[in-house]
Length: 540
Image (cartoon, rainbow, N blue to C red; front, side):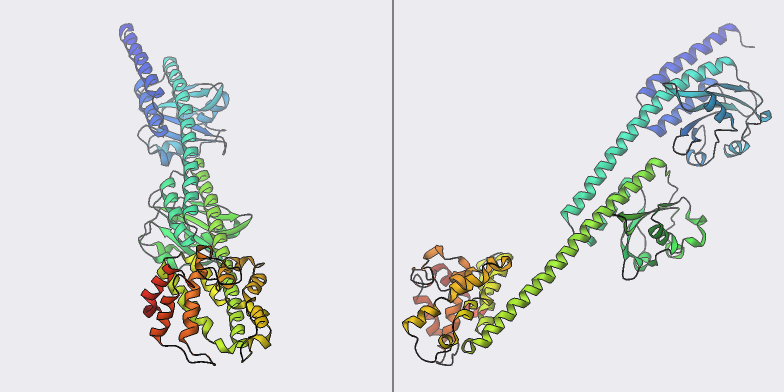
């Protein structure tokens, strides 16, 4: 028998412990640690053998074990606790506490739960956990052999449950806010990965790195849908011990990933070993020792782009929030893949368009050579030398591209010069020279309306201008002449003098160089001549 003094002392210690618990709970926002603290304290306060917390899952309309003294919460979470037909369910539904000192005789006793916690329950006290009149779960204390519970135990447990419910609610709010922040951070990181590099093969590993870190999984991969094969093919992976999956090709509907792509639904497998034959890549993963597997379709505007898979070598506490986060990351990954794919397609289209344009330019250039046989081969030579000179001059790749196109089209305007003038074997009259000298203007008028070629117009339009202002068609002077035209003018004259023409033999190297040097500051930009003379033997 416990005398009144001992009873009072016990209650005082309980009250003191409750005060300490309240302070500790208010400073703890880690939900898992909080749940363990509550069950440990409840066990201590009731001087019972175990305590447990069951929380209500609104999405699945069921109770689940969130924590229990001395038990693995991950295993407990798998135990179904029906709202109807269980002691915890009765407490939850009625919002009424229960004290039972003969649990095994109650039809609502759930032996399966008792088996999981590895002992038969003899006595139980359970109270509802409330937040603003809303029951969020149940707090229980149990004994497996000796010891009955009294009303005082129920009162102590009710006070504990009240503090616990508030703390759990705060921790949940904090966790939700933290997860939202993590999601937004993950979205930002994935978006940055895409913006920094739109090459899919470089972007996917970065995305998978964020997926692994955010979901805390051991490995992840992306399988992309190949529409030509109508199958999923391995695109990228991180965290695998071998390269066994790299050559995987899964037809739609084949295996779990194939089913995910075909049905457009997430698949979660907590234990791969129990998946059976459906996990067709099981042998390929033999050395990976994966325990859990999750896969989500990558969908954009209703179209499946592929499948995101994550693997873990231990069971995952994949609750609703984790799965929602997984799905959100899959959606963001799909957006990233779509963006990178669109960029790649755009690059390919632009490349094809450039090839088509360049082929057209080469065709025009060839047509000019055929029309003006006196300068056959001239266009190809001056184009090559102009590009090399521009490279030495340190111009950008973009500028050099325009110089190449301009050089190929430098005599495009001669298409407007009559054959009688262009092919006249004797000296041209003044009127004929006027016609010939109009070919830069003709080139400008022919090409100016083509946006793609407008940056290349400097050479066709200005390559006959002279540094001293005596050139044509606009008598530009000095740096009024575009640099591309100044570079090309030296090369053009060099080629015209050095190589044979039908009406004369080409000059010697020394004589040609001497003329170029003499025309520095007159016909040519002195700085261009200086560079040209320094590198001519290298670019010939």
